[in-house]
Amino acid sequence: MSEVTVVIATRDRRVSLERTLLRLHEDTDPPPVVVVDNGSADGTVAMLAGRFPAVRVLELGHNAGAVARNHGVAAASTPYVAFCDDDSWWAPGALRRAAAHLASAPRLALIAACTLVGPDEGLDPMSAFMATAPLGTVPDLPGPSVLGFLACAAVVRREAFLACGGFDPVVFFMGEEARVALDLRAAGHGLAYCEDVVAYHHPVATTSDRAAKRTLQDRNRALTAWMRRPIRVAVTETVALLVTARAGRRLPAAAWRLAVRLPAALAARRPVPPAVEQELAELAAAEQAAR
Image 1 (spheres, rainbow, N blue to C red):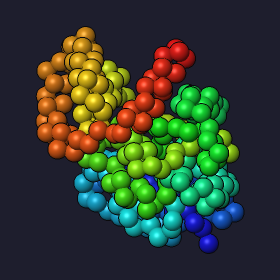
Image 2: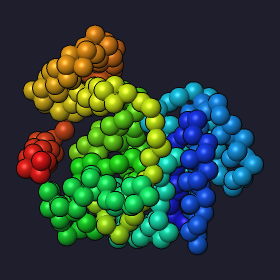
Image 3: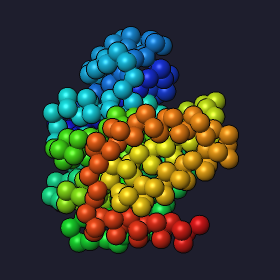
Image 4: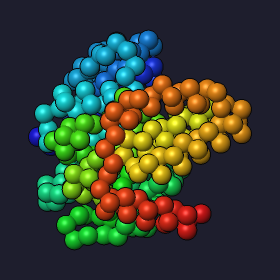
């Protein structure tokens, strides 16, 4: 019996979701799957009922963003949960290896997978960076310590994830991993990159505005800073957002979108301990050196 449940949040991506589920079922011991539907209008729920009756479907009826995954984790009955997006999946055997790592390392709360991207299966840049072990490796974890992850390719200890509140509605989507990683680390848990836990990510081509996407990333980085970082860092991230938005002629919209979510971010403010802030500084230095 599998110790890992796969949770997938989806919205209007029926075709790629079907591919992901078919890939997951290639494993000799397919994991239980919970799909959380963020109000799809493209026949996703009907497809799931017809093609994958064993998959548990949670229909939210609206777009809850990254918070949708929390519903899936709460519904899972296994000690560990693996996240997929509707355009990513786990290599055969990967989840068994993840479960073994988590079972043998009580402090481990999250595994960041080795993520291979696209038909050419190139190593995701974030995986490549984590493999360099900028935070070092400690004896009680199965791989280099990390302070971030890709939500489409991570395995969590269910109890620890729920205890930290899961993904939150302040950020909503894009960059939602940062606050979760900080809260897990602040609670004393370990997060590790595991090269032998492999996920595949085949991003769906979109026509989204790159500048708008960059502005959203910057806004969410600023919101996360207001929730968990020192004031000086939060101010710096906010200024960076406004400068970039101004250069892209998006200043009014960016300022407004930050302002409407800032009260909720401040209400959730709980700065991380100095030791975690020091790890963030070490990561920033390593990222700068790698450029």
